[in-house]
Image (cartoon, rainbow, N blue to C red; front, side, top):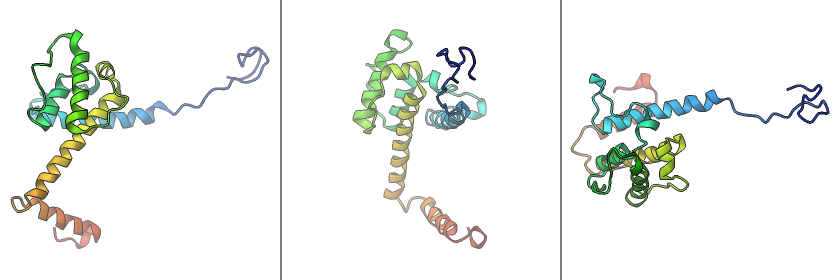
Length: 178
């Protein structure tokens, strides 16, 4: 806003000071990319069929608000860790309890760092809260899968092909035999 009579809001004609704000498209683009990745992972984990366009999670921040899908995902990653008698289904009054329970399970069972994240933030669909808990759950699952591969190296051909591909990337793809 330029100066002029009352231009700066002080009445002295000085230009208004407008604090710098990062363009929203930068953050939004990254958020959409992360949201799509987590949504695809959750749908895969929960058994959605993409060929039939039957997604369980269509809008990540809205669909996880009641806490049920998040708890289902946690139970898929580590079966038996959710006491389903505690979880309430379909009642909007108990959404906060489901989300608080998911945060407790995340901290106790998965060792997640969820300081500053509350059940009410998950219930409101706050992107930072939802992405924080889902990213940590996804990281836990990937770590578990990799540990399984290391424990059983002779049962699959994948570790050998991973080693072969690694050596190819270290040299050059044109000289690679894989």
